[in-house]
Length: 331
Image (cartoon, rainbow, N blue to C red; front, side, top):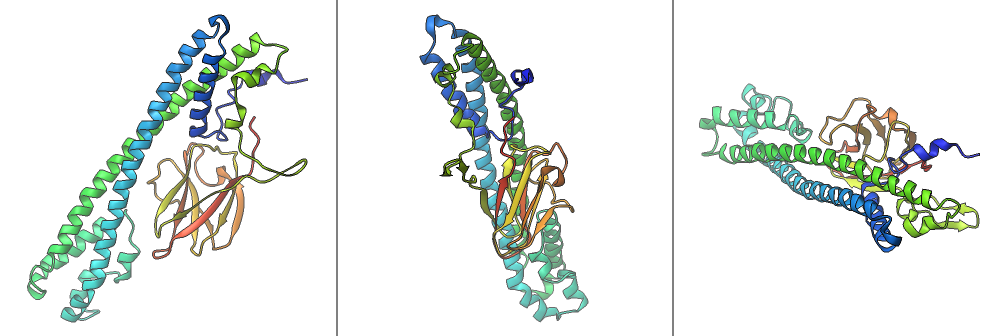
C-alpha cells in the first residue's frame, strides 16, 4: 500500500527541477487551469496561481538581467587585470636594463619574480598593482618620463571596475534569495492545485494529464532499446584560465550524487560555495586531465552552500568539464 506521507510532501522542492522548468511548469499549469475551469470551481486557484507565477517570473527576470550585468562587469575586470599584467611583462625589460636583475632596486619591482603577476588572483592583484606603481613613482628619476602613468591609469581603472563588480555580485546574490522565496510560494501553490484537483477527481487519474504536463519537470531520457533508458546528457562547459565558473545554482543538496569528469587539458577543481566569488577551498575536488570521480555534494563544502563551482588552475589554458547528477529519483 502507498505511504500516505507522499501526499504531504512538496514534490517540486527538489534539486532535480530547475528554476527554468518550474517557470515553464507554472505557466503551463496556469494555462490548463484557465482552459479547464468547469463552473468556475478553480477560479480561486487561478487567481492565486497568477499572482504566485507573476511574482516568480518577475524575480527570475530581475535576477537574469542583473546576472548579465554582473558578467559584463566581470569581463571588464578580467580584461583590465590582463592588460596590467601584459604591460608589466612588456616593460620588465626596461626595469631590468636600468637596474639589473637581482639588484635591490629590481627586487622592489619584482620581489617574487615576474611570474608572480601571472599567478595573481583577484584577491591579491590590487595589492600587487599598488606596490608596483609605487615602485615606479619612487624610482621615476631613473626610468623613462611618465613611465608610471600607464600603470597608474590601469590600476585605478581596475580598482573602480572591481568595486562595481562586487556591488553587482551582491545585487545578484540578493536577487537569488528573492527568486528562491518566490519559487517556494509558487511550488506550494502548484502543490495546492494538484491536491485540490486530485480531491475533485478521486478514481479518475486521467484528469492528471488534463491539468499537468509532468514531462516539463522530468529529466529527459531517450529510449535505447525497449526497457532500457539512455543516460541524460551531462552538464558541461569551459572555464577560462585561472577563473571560476558556476555549474549550478541550487538544484542539489548534501545527498546529491555527482559524477565529475575533467575533459580538458588543465587541472580543474570542483567545490560548493555560499557565493560564486568565495575563495576556492583547500579541500576542493582536484581532477587531472582525463580523470573522473563520483562523489556526493556533502564532500565538496558546507551543507548550506547554494553554488556548485569549478576552478581552472591553469594561468594560460582554458579548461573543460562534465558533471552528471547520478541520483535521478524525484521523491
